[in-house]
Image: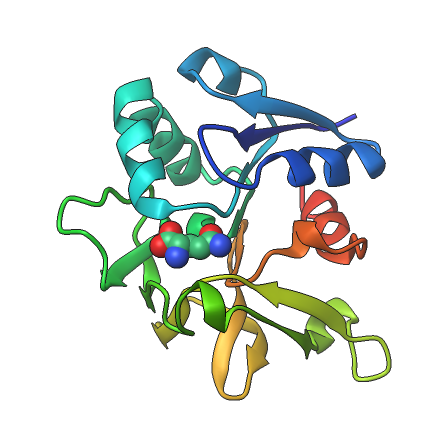
Length: 193
Ligand code: GLN
């Protein structure tokens, strides 16, 4: 049974825990550095990246998680979790801390603020998510990916903008896959372990 850490400082972590349990994994809420011991992968949930950044500093988790990512362990970052992985954050706070510097840039709230939250069908053919069975993606104050470098694989787009990307063992979505009953993306993440 894979042990999957779920960053649980703030935000939408509980539904990730539920989704992972449903798929037979062993989710571990991560609040302190010791919680990272023996985890096989890590989920960075949605929430508020500026608040999460602050709590990552006070909890002492920023450095061990960055090291975990640099070591190549599988990561699934969703929404604010995606923001924490980007090399460049536009419209962020100047002191906002990053857990990785993957080769993409992202604009916070790039699709608009809370009232502009929306749902949309997305397809990710490489993952077997096609036109006949799209993924219903929920975007809440979602980050917009504005540039991706060569090392980034775009798995899904909405209009022309990447909304699901992968870089080796790291996958990131601009939307909240844990808020739908569709567990395909979590299954895909577990399959990458
Ligand atoms: N706009 C939020 C941020 O900047 C992300 C929103 C979300 O995770 N649903 O962190």
